[in-house]
Image (cartoon, rainbow, N blue to C red; front, side, top):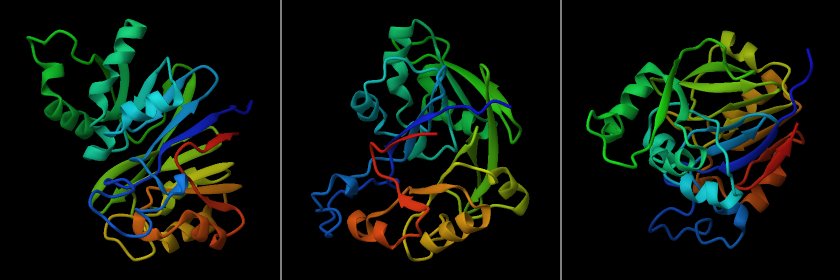
Length: 258
């Protein structure tokens, strides 16, 4: 099978509060290093034919303006928490430019949450100019966006089922705390794995740094990047030097080609 060439750009690599955190006066939140400035976690993927964004948090508008994206083919959602869906109203701009609804891929439970939060989008008497979404319900089975195969990866965010995704030799998982041995098999043979690593201390609903590194050591990607990073992790310039050779902290604006 011919290898899929993918361009990746990290739109955001922070937690639900982002970094800096509002009203926080810690050294990391006061850092002048741009790699310590983290918007809510999201990633842009260009397969050469399809422009795909995974997750659409409240920083979506700022992220799209920063990368200058003119066309968006699909948004895939990992789960329904606010920091992963609240930017969906801003797809209106792409609706206008592309003259069509935006394709949204998510599990049934996540779609139901989107419909509650954005009830005005789905009402019978729509206000002019509301976002237009073509909803595609998925589950933990492979699906395609045009000719691009997407493999969902199931994990638990505390007790909430969430999905990560594999596209070619790239996989992106965030907001996970546990993953089964069966699902780990989907992460084998990767060029790049992106995985959440909230902080060094244990957390109820997220991998901490050790848990993320343990997963990376088990599935053995060529390189791994840590995302969904909290200010408690420390300075990028310090902590990144302490990681294994094949692991790096991701940061907003980081670009990869695989």
